[in-house]
Image (cartoon, rainbow, N blue to C red; front, side):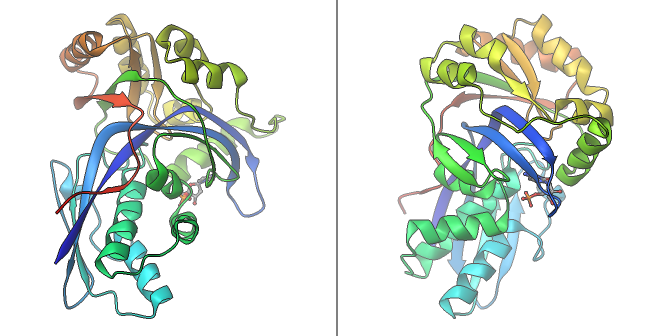
Length: 298
Ligand code: C5P
């Protein structure tokens, strides 16, 4: 018996970053948007907890207990006082260590898949608690759609979002999220960092579905830090803008870059120009919003 869950990637349309807290995390006003790039996690009854992964970047995915999918299964089993007797297979399509919450997505998907496989019927609020324990972005991977994340990003309020089209440029290699936050701390040392707040203009533009309104409102407070660690990303951003993207920004902590485009036709054009520019490893086209982690019919 097995259960497969499909789970989306995210882009942050606004990421306002506050000062480092005593626990090392940063308070955020993080407007998450789920996009139609999906991983699939299949949970199958097995003798012990194992993880496999397939996909173009599968070799970069850790298969030990540091994998959020394995951690999710472990935490759920411990709470239910059962053995984590499951094989988790990840069909990976979301860029790895790319700032699109791919690892978080697999954590949320594994949690939902194991909950169904083991017939636990864990209440949604408890699943969200486990997600928050797994990582700041994991609750949003479960919920999907569009949401404002406060606290360290784990406290979610759904927000309205019209339809938008995106191109993503995948960079060579990943960026470590803690390293990008540390670089943010270094770059902002000695400056006064305002309390992070969601931008009303951004939320209104998101709800309107008007890409011309959303383009100037997109903002990523981690972008300077990501560019400082990976200066070549500036060339990718410029190549997408020159090709006609309405806006370009680093996705989350990067190094994936995101390009807002008017429609599918513009997406194909911008993706082709980015591929030809030699400033990225690959491109992906997606639409938003996308649903959160969902059990697929067997
Ligand atoms: O919550 P998650 O495990 O995804 O966070 C990874 C790392 O990113 C944290 O250990 C911390 O260094 C950084 N982080 C942060 N503030 C946040 C979220 C993450 O500093 N709100």
